[in-house]
Length: 76
Ligand SMILES: [Zn+2]
Image (tube, rainbow, N blue to C red):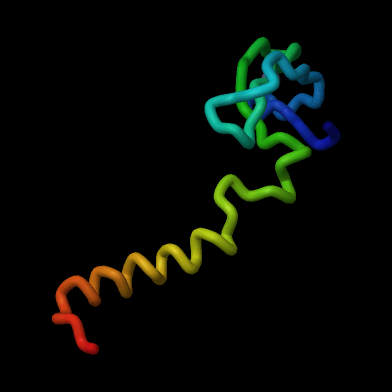
């Protein structure tokens, strides 16, 4: 967990208080210097996007083409 610093006072004296934050890729941290809570992206999720791009890209294209197909009468 290196590189996590307080976004308020930029102190490195932070401790993780919760495994999960508001999002699945974040954890909740507390700065022991200014006693502020904040969320930071979990190190073990840096390589794993929240939504798999390989699945979201084709689905986005399929949704767009599907809308066009809906407006278009069935050919063949
Ligand atoms: Zn702080």
